Amino acid sequence: MTKASLQAATLMVQGTASDVGKSILTAAICRILVQDGWQTAPFKSQNMSLNSYVTFDGKEIGRAQGVQADACGILATTDMNPILLKPKQDMVAQVVVHGVPYSDLDARTYRESYLPQAEVIVKDALGRLRSEYDIVVLEGAGSPAEVNLKDRDIVNMRLAGWADAPVLLVADIDRGGVFAAIVGTLEILSQEERDRVKGFIINKFRGDVSLLKPGLDWLEERTGKPVLGVIPYLPQLGIEDEDSASLDSKRVQNKRHEATNSKSADQLDVAVIRLPRLSNFTDFDPLQEEKDVHFRYITHLADWGEPDVVLLPGSKNTMDDLRHLNESGLTERIQAFVKLEKGWVAGICAGYQMLGSKLLDPNGYESDHPELEGLGLLPTETMFTPEKRTVQVQGKSALFAPNGTELAIDGYEIHMGRTRYLQDIAAPFQIRTAAENGDSSGWHADGAAVEKGRVWGTYLHGILHNDDFRRAWLNGIREQKGLSPIVGGLRFKERREAAFDRLADHVRSHLDMQRVYEMMDTAKPRKTEVGKG
Ligand SMILES: NC(=O)CC[C@H](N)C(=O)O
Image (tube, rainbow, N blue to C red; front, side, top):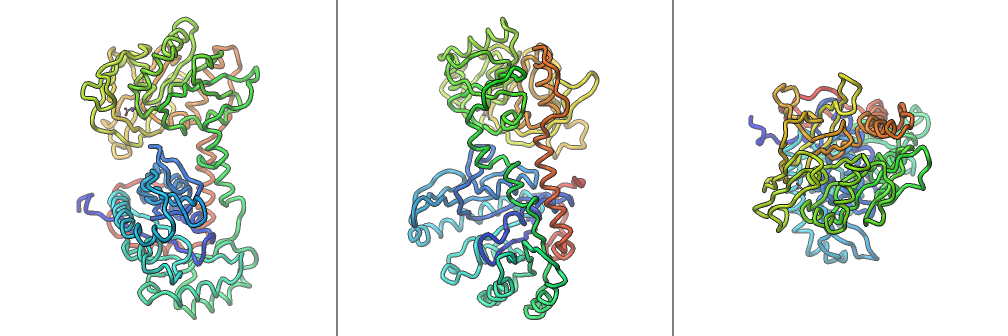
């Protein structure tokens, strides 16, 4: 069987009402499947939320699907939540389609005029995910038993039908009425819909399961369907926990665009050039949480101050933003900083491209400028191509590692430019994609570094999320300033990964995963054999 002909297995989590904990359970199930070696993606056709998640390519999706993608260890894309409704005022919502605002529609227009189109968008997005992953875990919205909405439904049972997904029905025991909610929901569904429901999950349980047991027996007898799990309420594993570590929590979203508080003597002044078309703000999230970093942006030459390190970020348009740097005087300032003041500079993606000698765009893929001089701080030249490279990679770097060792790194690329070396240099990063993993010839060189890492650049977004790499780099700067290195310190990535694992372990120990696997059609070969963890 060829890869393209494989359709991912599906599983759907629906609830007897809103807020029964579908999103967090979906995240937990996603993580369990990934721990078991399945390439898994989340999907929710339409999400109604004001709290959105910004994908790596700057698009908006529902927050929960972003978190679920993180739990899966994959980059969130708009296919995972193609339609986002952001309520604006009574009965009117901004309709965001594939991450960009489409129109403000009132509820009636949305329902009557837009839903038929939405159906196509939803099926296409789901189809793409099913061709890319082993398992897609779908999350429903609200209750599947809203009789007035069922005919145009694109989020619950009709979607389950298109996806041919077995449905787990989740009910919240904390609010009471759990038996009525489950039996009532089934009662309202059609026979075909009812048949899709393969079992129940009782969520947010506090108390003694033995007291609940007679109720569970009654429910199984009455419905002929199994209770697959009773998940105890554990606040420290709940959304709040995830929120605090989450990339997309409101707090972090706001912080992304701000400076941290005033600088103390033991801190490094880390400044990011705020390019007009700056992309990938998330690259700097870990820096904003580092205790020894005073984080700020430089928008104008007048903001320069006395940085210890200057970062050039990603940009939607490298050529135009480079012209902006030239015109604003920042180009010269950065050059003097590196050459005369021996300052530290790093560039990510567009920033890496700009640090090179030359940028070529003869066919106008990026802008109208066929050629621009770069900052000339790295021996590289970048040519813009029509093909966008979007991959997740893993790799290693000896750049700031103790002598003779390498640090594991990972990140993702999203760029049209292709960069070549103008001199024979040892690349600071060696990377490969998951597909190339295990293939010894699969390694590629990435990035460039000179002056023992005082100036470096890479295509890897997320490079600063690698805790050991980030710490080693910051310690290098500290050392040059006569500050003592910091040992240990922030474990940004590990903290989040551990939270997902704790959540998965908790749910796994109270959910009959064996039966969940039996419901899914996972007999097909996996796309890629991946080990546990
Ligand atoms: N993410 C980026 O910084 C993209 C850089 C540049 N616009 C490119 O496509 O190559």
